Length: 510
Image (cartoon, rainbow, N blue to C red; front, side, top):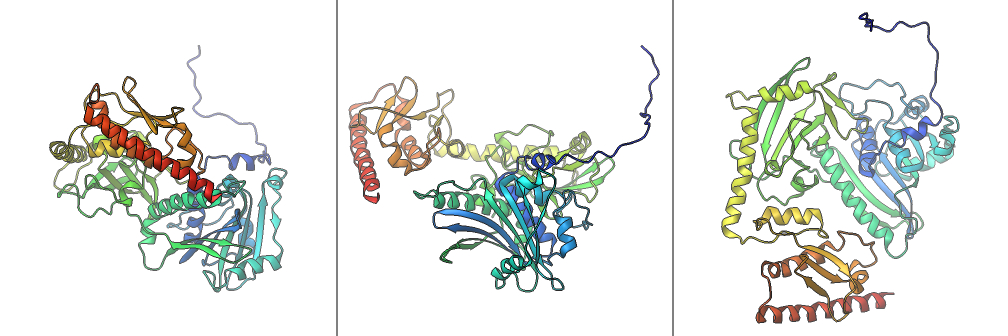
């Protein structure tokens, strides 16, 4: 084995190797969630100086047909449209811009739609547009030019709101998430579920912009055939640090982490109010998910929770949240993902956290201890006033299980209570299987309770939660006394009556 090593690789020339047209297919397969993709489009609107953004779901009766994002930003000329629709198009991003890579519009859109149309107008130029269709994109990067008359028609459609003199419309067609068959209320249920999640996501990640008086995001639903507007509401700011009262009166505190090659990075450390049920606290997953670092880039939240390899998340730190505004030049220390849904940090950041302190000498590691203590003390206070319970298990939604264990002390080593559907006598609504610590619900009544929704392991969360609350004490004993048996019979009779009424109601509706 030779000991010679060349630290640089010698070259003998170069070749131009343009990407294969299938690169567009790879670009659109980056795992963009629906809310993340729409947020990426809103980022472009903010960069364009928009004050009003409308996210418009268009339907034709029961069928969803298109999704549009409309803004009153400065708009784009023909040349700027070409740059915007070019993958990695070179444009000058300002220091405060939310865009970075020149791929967001294309990859976010084509991850969820078979075609994306971009139409825009400025105060000095006529309406113009470009359209990517996936089949044309992958066959040779062929981008269609939108007919000028249609471009103007689309702009005119929003001439009153929000576009007045200038603005942009992004139109998605062939949206993959849209229900293929909208009958039976599927479209309404999809819209309710999707718009709720979208509103929470935008409200959280863009909360600093939404808190300003001159910026608004509206989500609307319109029937294109009748012109009926089914929904029109403004997205509310959801500040992940907007607690009414601090969980610890000594917080928030500002710590400083001195990171090699970057310099001083401020860490604004907060301890949330225990047992909070407000959306600002609950909007980010479970207690495990919502603790940790909240990274901002140019006032846009790009990561909500997570400890970035500094430590493992644990329930006792669920009240700990740290706001970090990324430095303008993060180098290799802070690397933003293309989807702007996470930050990768180097070991240098972890090392700096271990030495971080505030002006009075209080260390960042002591902060974690304080957050842990606040959580444990709140649990002790609950334990003294509330009776211990057998914890909920499989079949009950994880968020419900988490809430129960946050609110109630749990009997140590008790087998969790599972809930599942199974065929049993139709004169019974439920059956108690003590040996397997399971509440069995009658499969016969499942469809009526779900109201046409698709079933799953954690379906019917409201009914299952109520059944757990009603029956959990039964599993604390080996058998039921006469009074408890009488109560069980009473509950069976009432629940059977209610379930059969539910079935009859479905039949009547049909």
